Length: 221
Image 1 (cartoon, rainbow, N blue to C red):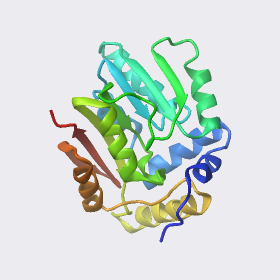
Image 2 (cartoon, one colour):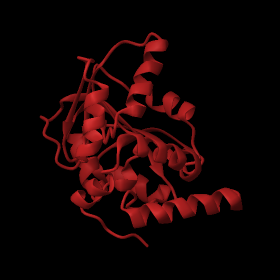
Image 3 (cartoon, helix red, strand yellow):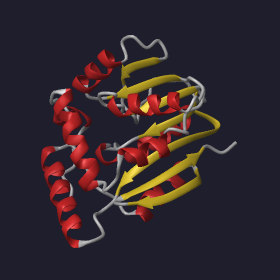
Image 4 (spheres, rainbow, N blue to C red):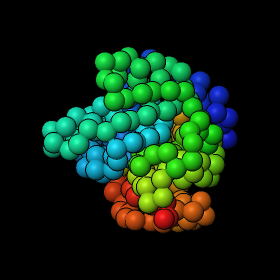
């Protein structure tokens, strides 16, 4: 069961201090997602075109780590626009990237993006689809702002699986997240696959890792 939340209720649930958000996120990533920072670097890091959209960037901690990962591998610099709906998260991201002219952070709803059609080369949604109140709307509007042939990389929190102790721990964290309002719902792969296809994407690649579905989607030419 899920407790449906509005955009503003979810933003309020994410109104904690950025340091607590980051610490909490580490435990959620480790035990609920059953994933690692390294896995996310290797998955999201390559999906940056010259003009990139980072959806639900939060405090920017993961985004900064991914950009540093790219820099260490001498990948080309990119222009990044980060969006989030929670003001406190955006405040942390704005401080983090204040000295970086290639990163712009602004308030926006993923389902009502304030950008022109066919604007971005790439987009990422890292650890965030589970808190979208309108997943279908967000998928459609991200598709709208992607250029034809552009790609969206996303990881999706699935219902817990695996060995009992880890599965139980993940379920406890998910239950807490739903009560807190930072989690709308985990998903089954089949329902998310149906959503992305219905939104108009092609699936370029996909794999399951821990309790996550990692998928790269492409906007048809």
